[in-house]
Length: 293
Image (tube, rainbow, N blue to C red; front, side):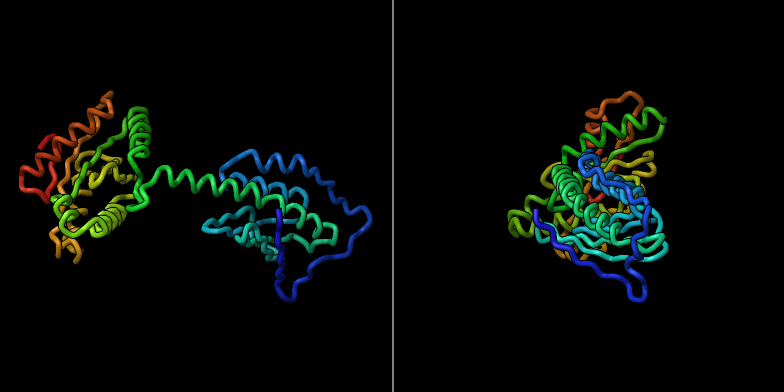
C-alpha cells in the first residue's frame, strides 16, 4: 500500500515539545491494533475504535475525519489543533486532531504510524456500506427497492406487534404511465419516475419509508393509523399538482391504504391496500381510498 502524507499545523501553535526522560510513551502493539481496526465493517465503529486507540497512546482529546462522502468525529474539540491528510488510492482522508498538550517527537512518530493503519479498514468499511446501500436502494429514484421493502415491512410489523403501535401502508402507481412511456420514450419515463421519487422523499415523515417495488409501483410504510396515511396521501397529491412537468403531461397517481391488524401477515396487509388502490382508480384516479372506504 502506498500512502501519501501531508501535514498542516495552525500557525502560532507549537508542533512538538522536546522528549523527556521517562515520558511514558507506550510501546505500540501494531498487530493487536490492526486486528481491532479490522473487527467491524461499520465505518463509525472502525473510526470509534481508531479514536479510542489514539486517545490511549497520545494526548488526543478528539478527532474529526472526512473521507469521500463520509464525516466522522470522536471525543471533544478542544486544545491545540493539528490537521493532516492521508492519500489512499487517489482518495484523500482529512483528519483534524484536538490535542491536550503539544506532541513530543516520539509521539508525532506514533501518530503517523497509527493513522496510516486506519485508512485501509476504514476504506473497506465505507466500500462495504456503499455496496450495501446499492443493494437496498433503487438507483433511479433513490428510494428503497423491493427487497428492502420486504425486509423493512417484516421489521415494522414485528415492532408494531411488540409495542402495540399503529402501522399502515400506502400503495401508489402512476396513472397511465405506460402510455406516457410508450409515447415519449423511456428516458422521459425515467425522468417522471425520478421526479416522483423526489415527491415521495419530501412528502414522508422521518419515521416513514418509501420504496419503489416495481416499474411505476411504489409503497410507503407509515408509522401511524389510517388518518396519518390519509394526511400523507393528501400531501402527495397536493405536491404533484404544483409541479410543472406533471401538470404539462397530466402525470397523476392513485393511492390505496390499509392499516395493519394484529397478527396479520404482510401479504394480507399488501393485498388489502392493493384492492383499495383499484377502488381509487375506479373512482376516477388521482385520489386515494382505504380498505375501509
